Length: 400
Ligand code: ATP
Image (cartoon, rainbow, N blue to C red; front, side, top):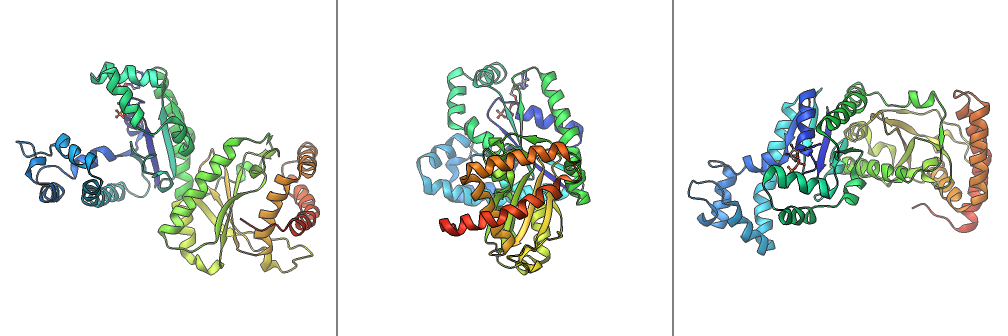
């Protein structure tokens, strides 16, 4: 099952996008709707609210008087916490129930207006944000919802801003254009990303092979850092949820070095205190973060740490066909874990070595086939590692 979190500010077109995704076969779970359902007349939720806040929060027809309740919790943080203590568990149970009902091969779109405000992005496999300029959004809600311009701007002001939304967005759907343009963008997102993503996830098939088929090098992209941060947050969330202890998760590899050219592949290292800590649950926790195909990687020890165990690495890959990802699981303090971190920090610190590595990469990419590229890079890496070690020792470097 693929779980997609969908969000966007008021009037951005989020509901239009969830409608279009539902037409393609997605199961839409609507957070706003669930929040209303759990406090409908006759529900235990409404009974608990009445017990805590009194009959004044009920309208004459027995439904929840939202403005009356809103006035109470707006002025009193303790009352607000009490309300949340009633509604949040009920919302959680209903949401989980709907997601489970969707079935193992479903593509679930969780429409979460407060995804950013509540920090929910790491729980999903992919976050899609619908965006439109403030001007467009105000025009739409004034036109279609009869809201005043002032009210619309106040609502926008009270929500998360575009900068915070961009931070969590794996995919950004721009909806400043026409409804037809929106439909085309959603269709492309479905065909090129969501459907193959779900397929890869179900088949436990990482998106690594295609990447290795070509060597296209790019100038450093700030987007790589943001991508890695989203992956790190997902991994941490799932390991914590599964109560698997770990020492650290960090962005490593060429995309973690500003100024270095790199393939469009983000590498993340997960350091375990001991491999056994993960056990069989590790693969499950990674899969919940859309990272699949966990397996032993062939290792090449180096002279200064000749035991293969020092380099033991489990490798997994992302199931997202667009943002290609490799996850290297190593033991904390092992030669492999330290090498990945010190190599990154050495290249970040040493402009001359960074430039030399960039030049070597582009030469190798031109001279060798994509098949030979990794081996050629590996030869350079083997010679460079002792220099990175010397640098680490002479500067008193320590990981993290
Ligand atoms: P809210 O957060 O208030 O629920 P929303 O992000 O779900 O808003 P929608 O309800 O999908 O937004 O869209 C707001 C209004 O703008 C709707 O009336 C919708 O029909 C209209 N709309 C959406 N996309 C477009 C578009 N590309 N061009 C014109 N109108 C649009």
